[in-house]
Amino acid sequence: MHRPLFNPHLYPGTVARLQISQEEIGYLSGVSRQRVNQALQSLEKAGLVRVEYGAVTVLDLDRLARHPS
Image 1 (tube, rainbow, N blue to C red):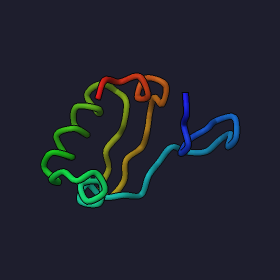
Image 2: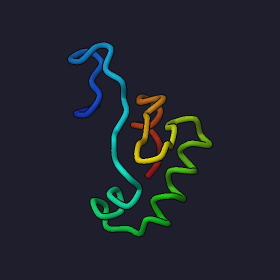
Image 3: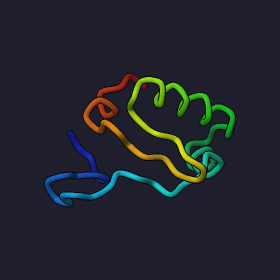
Image 4: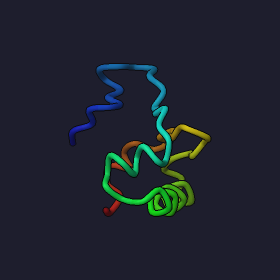
């Protein structure tokens, strides 16, 4: 399984926190900020990420990688 952003073997102790706004995620993914918000809320409820102002922290990378799209 490929994990380019947070590879714990290559970068031990790295915090899986992205400084990125929901609007920026929307621009990168081609969806609205509102849709990004809905998706992030769903991932947060599942315990996979923590959503903060201007940032997203990955809490469970293995589960997130297996999460259905």
